[in-house]
Image (tube, rainbow, N blue to C red; front, top):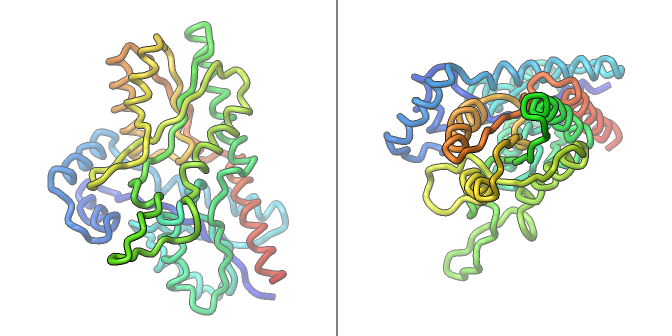
Length: 321
């Protein structure tokens, strides 16, 4: 029987503040990054102390492997990062050296953008050689993903009611992306540009779909809203509305308590520990809004079951193809 395995792909994060310039060069594919942007990101990392993305992703892999073993699938779950160690190409090479012949590959970005998720796909396929791969493009509608977020949101709403006497509206968020990466360019015969796939990119709708599925599972929510967070410093527009714009709007509606839940991230890292817990909380307070956040999924057993289910589907397709 062919030796199978699972590969989880994530963004990656540096271990130290000193590594951030090299890390950012990876993120922007070597393009020049203004020094003030580098220094700002270094400041954010220093304020949160450490980004735990790598260790949390490794723990998610361990839990997924345990779920698969419990279901009778004795396969190893590897982790590869796009922008930092362990790099995806190095991990795929190690898998081949370990004798892996087929792999179910899952990007830990549930909402699919053909441009960004496509980078993960290309990084894995580039080193696959004869190893056969089943790549999960997107899983924004997976019921266990929505269950996992809903569990965290239930707990946050219970705390909010105990402290304030009522439930709070929810602002769901996902990472923004440059508009040019998800919107097909206007036809230009003189400068043709390849667009990956037909029609609109699914990312924005995927993100809103996940939010809607979570909200349906938490009936105590009095109202919910959606925004894109963590817009970058690169030129050109990024998709919105921004969190700050939504906080302005909610403040004008006299909202005093708010729960913000990122549904595009599966574990704590700088976009949560700084952007949400520091920057957005400070901005909300300036508008008279108390902003709270549910615990991130991190080591959620329900998330591990979702990943194991996706892995089982991918491995089955490889066996029966």
